Amino acid sequence: MKKIATFILAAVLANVGAEAKPLKVFILAGQSNMEGHAEIRTFDYIGDDPATAPLLAQMRGPDGQPRVCEGVWISYFTGTGDNNGEGFGKLTAGYGSRQKPDQAGVKIGPEFTFGLTLDAAFDEPVLLIKTAWGGKSLHTDFRPPSAGPYELSVFQRENYPKQTGHGIPKDFEQWKLDKARETGRYYGLMVEHVRKVLGDIKRVCPEYDPAQGYELGGFVWLQGWNDMVDGHVYPNHNKPDRFALYSDLLAHFIRDVRKDLKAPRLPFVIGVMGVGGTKAAADGVAFREAMTAPSLLPEFKGNVSAVQTAPFWSMELGAIDAKRGEVRQMRYYLDSKHKDYANAGGLMTEEQKREHMKLFEAKLISPEEVSLWQRGASNAGYHYLGCAKTFALMGRAFAEATLELMKTAKSP
Image (cartoon, rainbow, N blue to C red; front, side, top):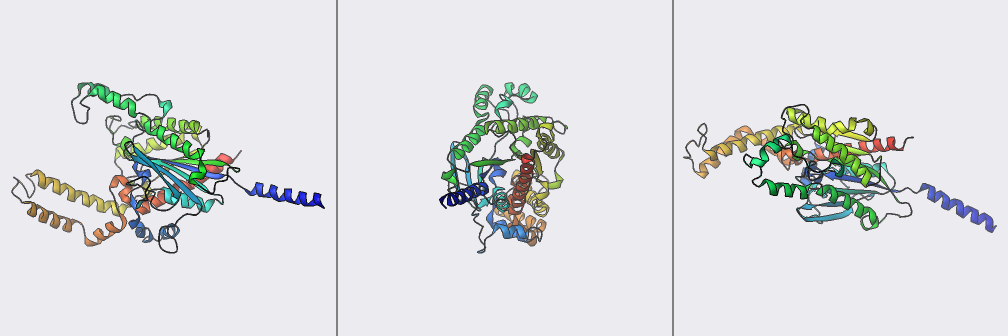
């Protein structure tokens, strides 16, 4: 009888062990758009579209407040300058850009719906490790180790030693010292923080069971603005290969991340810059192609995916933003006393300029457009207008792409 009981107990324990699954860990990294600048107040705009109303329902709890995800934890490392810090806990809204890293904010990035989508896909707990800083480049700040030291472009070699011209450093020798110190710094901070969290997972995720361990499920990269607009590092405007260097650096980045995290086939998702939507200028299109290029390399087939974010840009909000740009331009003309505008010669008072601007804006932007803007936007164009609908769609798309790559990674 004792032998039978022992056998049954052993069978039960074996069954429990078979059902248990390791914690799923996902890493998100990049610059300001990975931080996320969509204010929670723009959530209602998501519900205006029948196609995305179900997504809004997923993002909110029964009380109408942003959902607290019971199965997903997050560690978010960010900051400015040397003032970096960590916020962690159960995933909810507020893990977007923050004034203070360890204090809940009022914004989301792609992490919110990314985590919600993964929570629905897995029975086991999920951990997100997010590292993001605004205004950071791949050519310098996130430069991967295998890419070697920073190298000057032809434009920089020809112009920087002269120390004259727009945007050219006044002290070239000091600039080189600063550049050497900055190169790869944020790549290092990113890897260091990931290792720190993985070294003590229960600190962030109390439900973690060390006996079951963890599995690195994927890495999402959302960055690009600072590289795209840097005409000194990428000087060949309107040339098809202008951003070839970015493609090369990103390929190095993928290899190095996998090496440093000891995950040679870690699913990697590239969030391709989509500011401006389908109406991007030629250089914008070229940059998107450069971001996509690594996913097409034979070595990355089936384990790297490029997700286009342009389709998630709000065209109607973008059109309003263009009009707002005209208003800002008018203010510039008035302040500059431009001869073709009302303040030619500088005869207008500040009160007259304000009244002129008020009338100009009212004529250009309708009350309905003002209301729509307030409902759906909360930031500038380079931050995808701070539109929660855009960031929610991106996060979901990144998660879906990651899940597809995970299937491929597990196939023989």
